[in-house]
Amino acid sequence: MRKIYEDYLKYASKKLAGGFNARAMLYKEIGRLGLSAFEPGAKVVWTTSYALPMVLYQPFDVVPFDFEYAGVFLAAGGRAAESIACSNRLGYAVDTCSVHRMALGAQELGLFPHADLLVSTTDFCDGKPKCNEIFKEKYQVPFHLIDIPLDKDESALDYVEGQLRNVFIALCELSGKKEDESMLIDPIRNYNQVLGLMDEVNRLRRQKPAPYLPGNRAYTMGMVANILFGRPELITIYEQFVKELRKAPREGGPDGGERFRLLWLLANPAYPTNIFDTFREFGARIVAEEFTFELMHPLSEEEPLRSIAEWMLDSRFIRPVQERIDAILKWVNDYKIDGVVSFTHLACRQGNGALYLIKQTLNEKGIVLMDLEADICDAATFSPNKMRSAVENYMQMMCATS
Ligand code: SF4
Image 1 (cartoon, rainbow, N blue to C red):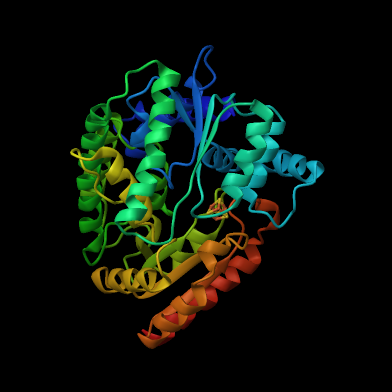
Image 2: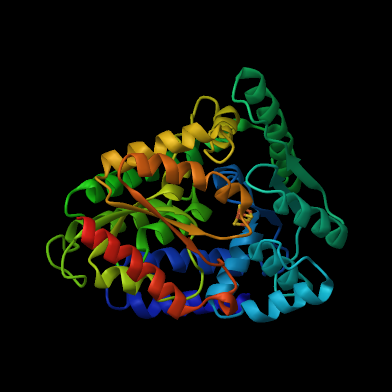
């Protein structure tokens, strides 16, 4: 794991020698943060950033460590095979999400930093809390599981806020700080400022044609950036990203110009694939991603913990499916979408459960959903030939009907 973070710093310093670059700036901060978890005396809190906004950890002298992202980073660095093999050897079910198999294997192999505190949530998937139960046994440290109800009303907010307060108190104890919620104001202000910049990114991408971005760049920016939510460094990174988007080609470009506009649902493969090159050959630009919107809920400086609770309860992956469908239809309309692609990671039942309903609704609007099935972490299960045929078929159908 250290090597992965060191490589991020090397990549960043090489890239940044040539000038400002938002992606390199982002990976530099991720590398720094990741390595700090291995420093002697570091107090490390294992958590999940896309389910619980990282602003919660920023006022404290602790290193938040997202054990799921760490597994994804290992897979992106070509280190999936050994962790998955280790998870298999330990006897964990092979149809469990590979993100968790990566984390379980990597932890067993000693690739992860130690844990001082574990914080997880019950939403998104049950693999998260189950992994944390295992880690709790291994590290013998406190584990806070935030139970997320399906309803979003005042009592649900009270309930989640109360649990967040317990985590907040545990963080105060771990870092020797006096309990004072106002210490969350600065991180919240930083996060809200980044939200404004993310809004600007979205506005630029709503233009037709949209600025050309390589691969699934905006997805990576948003998802990886969320590990830094609340940190002032992220403001500079997103300001740079906005500048790059303003300069990016809209007419022409490496894809020969925008022919189709895609909305991306769910996840993204961690390892290199031919998916994005194939879309590029057809002039298909990804102009919006469901997960970027998932991370964008303003927080309140007046009621920090309550607004964090609201952020969590607002997730479209726990709200009634109709809310997710309505949101998708709104993005289709706002971004003038021609096609919707779901990167369907088969083990992710909570992500995939609604796909048939989404597909039916989109069909009624004349939009075809491409269900692109592949694993997030396990490149050994990926067939470039099959994927190329699937993407080509989809694009040829779009060309024929456009
Ligand atoms: S991909 Fe789905 S199952 Fe896997 S960790 Fe994420 S939410 Fe959970």
